[in-house]
Image (tube, rainbow, N blue to C red; front, side, top):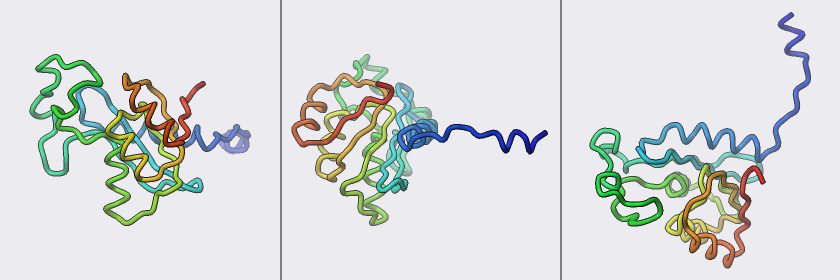
Length: 157
């Protein structure tokens, strides 16, 4: 009976479906109290780097010491400088840089639309395509990515 289940043919996910599912799993490592975000960078159907949002290496996470942005009632999308976390997209870019992995021409998958800080880095890293799931209140990021010719794909549309 188990062999019958193995032999049942299931539809293979598309590459975007596959990578978005992995991105959602990466987000579960996040230590942010507001929003769990995951990102992966791929090229030629290979995962090159992953990242999730959280405090810099060896520093206490917000889960341990609290969220300054929550304490000050700062709305989403504002006052990024008051956040301890490195964004998921930034962590993926930094991971690639730390290990010398070339990502030019790659695709970045993210559970959330990148903010303007991440958008600037993504543009300079020469990522050509972004597939994202959730919206983020940052019109400037979208404008800059579009001006730079980065293809933006809202997952699920």
